[in-house]
Image (cartoon, rainbow, N blue to C red):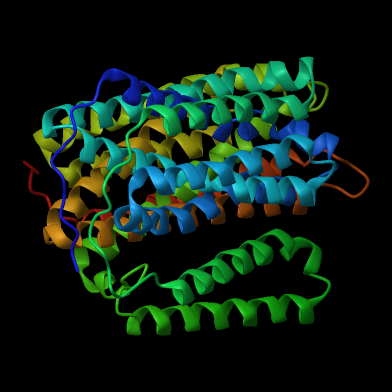
Length: 465
C-alpha cells in the first residue's frame, strides 16, 4: 500500500536552520573521542586494544541504525523517527558524560551511535518539505555543517577535557544536541509518511548482523590477551562463524533484507566493496596510530602531546577529508572513477609506508594524516558515485548500504588490529609500546592498500556524467 505523497511544503529558513544546528551539534559530539583517546586511555586504564574498541563502537551502532532509520523514516515520517532517534543519542551523551569506567562509557557510545542515522533522516525531511532545487542546496548545506561540527569537536575536545574534565567533553555537545533537537521538534513541520512496506523490517537480519559485528570486535580486541587461552579464543571464532552463516542464510531468504547480498554478485559492487574495505582499514590505522604516537612521551621516541595539541594536529586532516569529496567529484567527471580510485590508493599506500619510515617530527605525522584523509575521501566518493550509477535506480539504496556496512567493517577491523599490534608490542611492565609496533602497523596497512590495486585496476574506466 502506498500513501498519497503531499507536494513539498513552502517552509521558511527557520526549520532548515534548526536541522543545521542539529547537524553541527551531532558532528561535534561524534568527533570528541579521537583527539582525546590517549587521555581517556590513561584516565580509564585502558589497553590499546580497549581504546580501539571504544573508538569504533559509535560506528558499529551507526552501521546498524542507518538503514533501519531510513526505512522507518520512509514509513512513519522523517521527523517522527528523527526526534526519537535523537532522544536515544541524548541518553547516550548523558551516559558517556557520567561514565565512571570503560564499560559504562562503551554503553554511552553505543547509544550515541544512533546519531549516524540522523543525517539521512534530515535529508528525507528536506526532500519532502522543499522543492527539488532548494532541497539539493539544503542537503549540501547540512552535510557541510556536520563536517564543520566535527571540526569544532576535534578542536574543543582537548581543551575541555584538560581544562574541565572528560565528563564535560561529552556533556557540552550533548547539551547542544538536546537544544537543537528541541528546536527541530518545534520548528520543523511534520512530514507525511511515505511508502508502506508490507515486508516489514528485517529484524532477524539486524540482530544477526549485530551479533556478527560485536563478536568480530571481541575477537580482535581480546586476541592478544586470549593467545594463552586458545579454547576461549576458538569458541569466539566459532560463534563468529555461526553468526556470519546465520546472517547470510537469513538475508538470502528475507523478502526485504536489510543488506541484499545478491547485489554482491555484481562485479562493480563487490569490487567497490573490496576497495572500500581496504581503504578504510588503511585510514583507520592512521586514525588510531597517529594520535597514539603523538602522545608517546618526548623522552622516549614520541612528542608528549596532550589532548589539546593532538586536536590541533588532527584538524588539517579533518579539513582535507571535508574537501576530498568535492575534489573527487570533479575528478570523476573529468577522468572517470577508476583513475580517481587508483590515484587515491597510490597516495594512501605511499603515505602509510612513508610514515613507517619517517615519523621523527610532528609535521611528518600531520602531512601524512592529511594525505591519508584526502586519499580516503577521493576513493570513497568515487566508489559511491560509480556504484550508485552502475545499478538500477531502484537498487541504489541497496548497493550503497553494502558499501556503508563494508566501510564500517574496514574501520572496525583496522582500529582493532592497530590496537592489538600496540598491545602485543608493549613490553612487560611498560605502558609505552615499542616504536617497532607503530612501524609494523603502518607497513601492514600500506602493503594491504597497495594490494587493492589488483582489484581497482579492473574497475570500469568510463567517465560518469
